[in-house]
Every structure is written in structure tokens, then in C-alpha cells.
Amino acid sequence: MPYPLIPTPCSPLARMTLEILNQILTSPAMRDLLAESVAYEGDSLRLQAFLRRQAVSPAVSQALAELAELRRRGRAKFSRADRMFFTKQALEQATCEAVATHRARRFEGLRTVADLCCGIGGDSIALARYADVLAVDRDMALLKMARENASVCDAAGRIYPACADVTRFLARAEAYFIDPSRRVGGRRVQGLEEMSPPLSFAGDLLARCPRVAVKLSPAADYEPVPWDGEVEIVSEEGEAKEAVLWLADFKSCRRRATLLPSGASLTDEPVGSPPVTEPGGFLYEPDAAVLRARLTDVLAARLGASPMDKRIPYLTANDLRETPFADAYRIEGIEKLDIKTIRRKLRKSGIGRIAIKKRGVDISPPEFAKSLALEGPGEVVLVVTRLRGRPYVLFCSPVSRI
Ligand SMILES: C[S@@+](CC[C@H](N)C(=O)[O-])C[C@H]1O[C@@H](n2cnc3c(N)ncnc32)[C@H](O)[C@@H]1O
Image 1: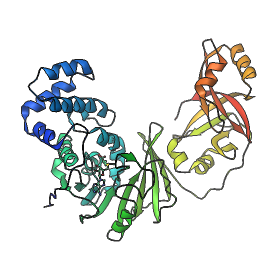
Image 2: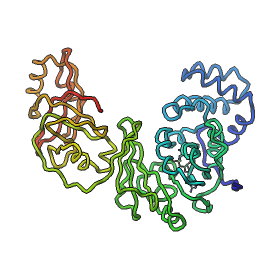
Image 3: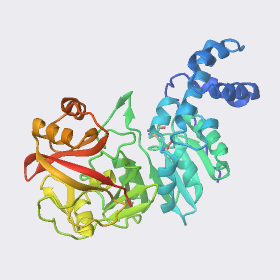
């Protein structure tokens, strides 16, 4: 695929200028120095002393120290982070490997995908398992990092980088994936039209191609999106990581919650809202993806469970059913939210260790725990919430997620 490399101005980078990056990429001695810097494992004083002994400028030394630290932090997102290239902001914005791998599967069967706004290549690398990837970003230094990272991850043969403004460069492909920047002009933006490129750019692409996917913040308000599509919320280990709009031919339902690492997926179904009930023997706390995808009613129908307050998404039932979509707790007792009564009850049972969960009640868990002043070997989970509008505390013990 002979794609052009169209140079456009680079955004200012923290320490890693394009010039320094070029020096590192082209000099085996500098690469060795970088590998040695990573081996200092975040011991910044010893690393700085080491770098001072090398024949490099202060600017290069700073860039190497920063990259070594980013490689260390990058391990939380990438299995080969120790050899990859990042800037601080690009690492923060990059999709982590597990999420990118999950998302990329939907592109299987296509020959070409354009990854518009590829950054350091987190998504391009995952997409390259399934298709040839045209990776476009307007920041030349990030694009070079993406190319290098692709090579570290054995994906370089299927990634074709192009440096351009995606709104001006007509990238031809069978599908488009867009991961817009939510940092514009040095500040975080919330609005979907404030992103770069704005969400409406996906509409321009839809006019040309029936397969467009857009990554959004998991907190984004996706209701005003003007196109018919699917919203998938992805969580990893219970934390909501991203929302993806799957537009036109990509749509397979209206709303989906996907949990990683299991890959379990819950989709919308026509179920009614369950009635509010009294607490039963068990309490379910839905996964963050289920909550953000507004699928609590679907989960309640599957579990034969109901809410205990019409505004709060904790669910309760008398029988325990297996589910990957919620944490389950056995309800051992219930008290009104009265600190003296709760303290007395916990002390009597020898409870010294508590975990506090709260929804719908304005307390600070650390202050609440401090005011209980407990000692003892026993453990309990306190769920501070509302039952039919009134504040209560439920004494619970966890049942592991199945
Ligand atoms: C959220 S990051 C992409 C992260 C990437 N998906 C990854 O996993 O590494 C957004 C990127 O969009 C790029 N960008 C923003 N507006 C752009 C535009 N109009 N044209 C090209 N690139 C753009 C930024 O340079 C930044 O690298």
C-alpha cells in the first residue's frame, strides 16, 4: 500500500523532541543507554547520576530519564513496554493492550482499516492482527514512535504510517477507527464536539463508508449521538475503561457491556423495570460497564433481582445466581444509619476491619470508618445506601464473583 508520508508540524513534546527521538532511533549507542536507563527501575537519583557520567547533553539526558520512567509505567498497559516509545501524554491516552485486543476482533475479515489518530500505536498494533492498518496522526514524533512500537510488537509489516491532519487527508479503507484526542490546547475537554477531531467528523466518514467505530471516554454522554449505532462500554477488572460507538454496519445491538479479562458481554433486551423491594438474602453490585451501559434492568431480569431504591442500582434477591456481571454479597444484617448503633453492633461482634461502599448517601468513607473507631479480628463490608429513600447500612460478606 503506497501511502504518502505528509509532514505536518509536530505538537510540542515534554522532553522528547523530534530531534532527540531521531538521535535515539538512529544510534545503537543511544539505544543501549536507554535500555540501561530502564534497568534503574525508577530509582531516579541513581539514574540521574548514571546519565551524568555519559557523554550526552542535559536535554538528551532528561529525555532518556523520562522515557525510562514512562517505559516502567507503561508496563501497566503494554506487555512489551520496556522496549516501546512514549511521551507522557501519549501513554496516558493510549489504549491498553487488553482493551485494544478485544476491540480489534470486530475488524476481523476486513482487508484494510484506517486508524485515525493513532498516537503511539496502541490500537494500530492490535488492529494489525486482523487487517492492514493505515495509521494516521498529525504528530510526526508520535508517528515515529508508533512505527517503532509496531516493530517491537512484531506488527510493522502490516502498519502503514501517514503523518497528516485526518480531517484533511482522505484515507481510503474498508473501515475507520477514530480515537479522538480529549486533550486540546493543553486542557482536557468534555464535549464530544470539542474533541480533536470532533465527533461530527465520524458523520463525514459515515457518508463514505458504512463501517466506523469511535472510541470515547467511558464517562461520555453518548445519548445525543445523532447516528444509529451501538454503544459498548468496556471495563477491565471492574473499572470502566472506554466507550466505543459502533456505527452503521458495525452495530450488533443498542447497548453492550463487556468485561475484561473474561470478555463476558451483556446486551440490551426488552425487559421492564423491576419493582423496588425490601433487601433479600443477597446484594449485587453491578460491574461499572453494566452501570455505564445502563443495563442494570437487564441484569436484574437475569438474576431475578430488584433494586431496593428506585434511584440506586444495587440489586437484591433471595437466591444467589452465578454472574460475571456483578459482585455478590450475603446480607448479614441491616441498621438505620446511626453511628452509635452501628458502632455498638460491630464492637459486640469483634469487627475491626471494614470495607465501606456507598451509593446515594453523602458520607466520606475514611471519616465514617474513623468515627467507628473499631478494633478486633472480624471483617465486614458495610454498604451505606438508601432503602426506599431512607439511609441504611447493610452488613455484608462478599461472595466471590463467579
Ligand atoms: C487519544 S490519542 C490516540 C491514542 C491511540 N489510539 C493509542 O492507543 O495509542 C489521540 C491522537 O490524536 C491525534 N490527533 C488529534 N487531532 C488530530 C487530527 N486532526 N489529525 C490527526 N491526528 C490528530 C493526536 O496527535 C493524538 O496522538
